[in-house]
Image (tube, rainbow, N blue to C red; front, top):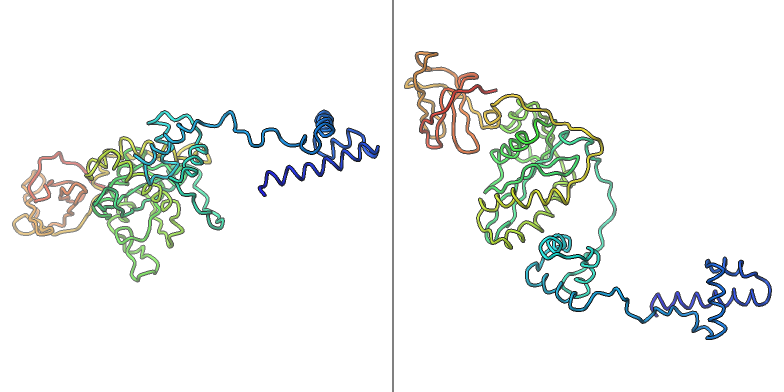
Length: 392
């Protein structure tokens, strides 16, 4: 016996008791109606129907009848066919966004989900686990950002790393890019994109990857006294680097990656994108703006924690930097390359001088003497023509 039928029988029994009390004079109509939690008018209407038809007169006359608002069968079948033919394997929420945008869908999310589940093309999700208290977000954008990477087969047959840089206060993703392998350079690119868009932020929350932190012993605390290249760059910019000590501590970025893994590969396949360069263009132009519109949340307070970056040396700070001593031939040895320093008006030569080699994410190189850039080079060590500029 289904729940609806049980409720009907309970109502019939309760009405019979109230009706008998009213007929015997123990209850007034108002008291009988209050006992049934209905109005006086409804009690009188039920009484007439009970006297004329017995208990059958108390049945809800809508039972067994199809709703006038029931969707046509053709519409339901068309919805299921659209999902099967083009969006198989997508989450209902992801499919619903495209159903509205690409197919002019007018139905609600709940209606779409229920129809797809009834047609058997979508499996009902398991109940979620126990409730856990989440960490409070920062009140303002720019107070703390998260950066993390996820290796996944983002395109058919091509596994690579996705690097995202996300605001803790709003979950807005400022930078997302696919790279062959996560490392110092990819982290530099993510931070540089944020600073160029928004300005300097206060802190960055990361895992304990070797390009972020030096950890003397596996599983132990990080050694802040031995900064990595990335840590050194953030210290120069005045940004605090914060280490996470458990996967749960990075739950917000882990959940974001799960959503990207559900959505991005399917959209890239739908757009027939097979290269990393084309995928990065798609992410910047279409996927990321749409993602932020859907998943960005308002900050708890108005205002911003970002401050403007003053200067033109951001790329020089966000680069690999190593100290070298100039050889007798005015060359600097760096990774099997010989970087020739040309004569200039400031010194006769740079023999035995301490200089600093910068390696940039675009693979170019530069040699600095203090704050002065002496020369810039291609990845092969060939000199490039560039204006001199100061480094931090």
